[in-house]
Image 1 (cartoon, helix red, strand yellow):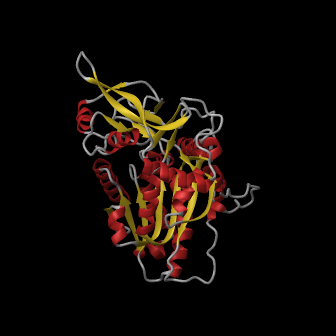
Image 2 (cartoon, one colour):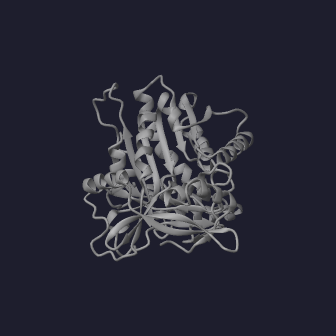
Image 3 (tube, rainbow, N blue to C red):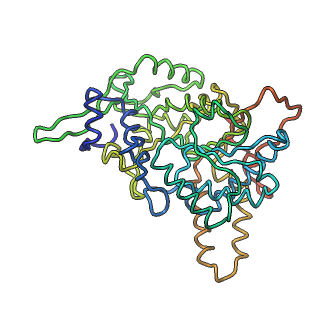
Length: 420
């Protein structure tokens, strides 16, 4: 089990009553995060950044976005040569506070001035509260930095993009780890699906408790297909009763929808991910599920529904299988520290030393942020994965240049990019 029982807020009580008093954990997580009026993302009350509930790489400062921007420059130039008259789209799915989008606009305007008239920014956000914050942030950024928009921007959904697919780059930065997950628990030697149940109290009100139910046949079939293809044993042979883990069932349909939204281009996934032998280890007896609020982590994921973030790491092998069976081709993957070094992190450190003494405070802040980005105990363990989407109607006689973040850092003896 994960954490204790928790009081059920009134708004959620109504959802449980309408659903018969018990739902899969994945449904509880979807409500807690994405309910348009009360969910932590849906309502827009969750705050991302140094003064918020949790930080992302992009909210630590502009250097992360500038380094990612170097990769986008390479991809967009190659696509521009192949499609000399087409609009090129930068699609960010789940843009958070739009800090990454703002910084990428600045980087691309400096390094791709000749292509700016062909670019557009497309933001995909399912939560109305977060979309409003993004609109406000981008408007503020435009007013402070530019007299007029450098290139068009629009909000849409993946389902709408499927009807008018684009050419370009799709970014999923710290997105997939927030998808509602199935929680699985080993009981009497069999895996069961965890549920969340409503328990009425005699004194009034109600609590949320953990429960289990048999894994539905359709879900079990999808799991078996993926486990067979990836040669993963679930549960691991030496797991004991009570062993608990997660299964990211929603990722497969997301990869399928995303592939239909892109005619040709790149998908960059940046997220917490572990190899299967680490993810589904008997020693990882309570999975990776965790909640964040006010910069503090907790395993009380049922507590304060709608007021905290809930997240679970990804399994690399199952994620790659879900992607490659739904329209994508894996180019390669690397840890964030390796990726950023290949994109020029060392040069950025060196350039900080050239700043004048009156900017010492900025130098120290940027240095600290850069170190956090590559710290193996912190954000350095993120994985960067490059997936390709090819247009069969536009043949290519020569293979494209390997993505920069998968190449050897210049002048450094780095390890080869990880391959699955």
